[in-house]
Length: 431
Image 1 (cartoon, rainbow, N blue to C red):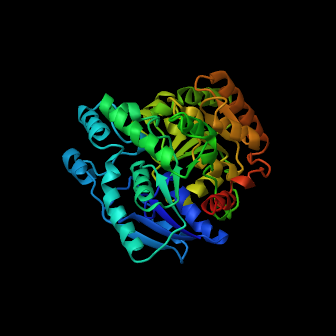
Image 2: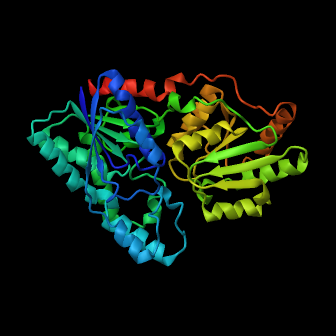
């Protein structure tokens, strides 16, 4: 089978967004699927972070076609004097700056569904050339965000009748930061119309959680549950070849990835400070690997934990996995926003593969909660569950004093390996 993969995020792009598509492409040849990837030229695109090491995971036989693009991020940098473009969720942006509020309004109302839509025309021309040369594909897979990429799949479906799989890593109009874009009624209507067209016309829709499937199903009476397929992100077994080496001199709680004050971990930080007071013999430490907002750093300082906290800037994915294996306990947080029951970060599966106790701050009864309970891998605490958090931290402190290695027994998470999940995708391509 021949699959055309269209994805904006591709090595040397780093961060969570690139992982899913890269791992699919890495494992699809095992199941008889030959991939051609169309992506943006990194010299012309705009990535929040880079990770050159990920290029080593692209199979030798995969053809990668890189195109130009027409995006506003160059102008944004010149006008703002900033070197970085905004992260998803604006974790690296000021929440109160008038300048930033203006640019968010422009982004939300003049660039629908998002500023990377200027890439679409370049991709459509590249695909038209492939087809004109006699190339054939059994299916096309479009991966988003950016959700403008799904409009490429929509155009290819309408023009050429290609079988189309829309892979939606996140919600679209329900994404948690959409309210920050200050969209007008017209902009909201147009965005919702694009979303509905994609969902109705795609042959199959892939989502990462059951709650996201529920959200999308409610977008149109024409939609049926049969076209939606929950394929979560998973972990790659080859990333976990190194042994676990938890520290012997500290109870080290590690968080990897982007986090901001919207994740509301204040009560967890307060519980950590109280645990330190009650158990002075236990050297509790916090480590954040990745982007941490200034607001959250201020909360850490206010809790009296600045001297016990280490901040590590963004690192390549391989190094990030190493930080998981060198932790005692892993911290995960889900933003306190609307529709957060379906937020199932890709890193949770890598947390599972690390076999560490997981503390998750987020909605009880969510998809993340169900996953951790299913795998007996940790606990989810509501944002205000101070007493429960403190009780669990004290339990971990007592366990650590008896044995600093808190690693869990081998967990039953094999069905969430990237290879197993890619096998499910291969079945849909040949459906």
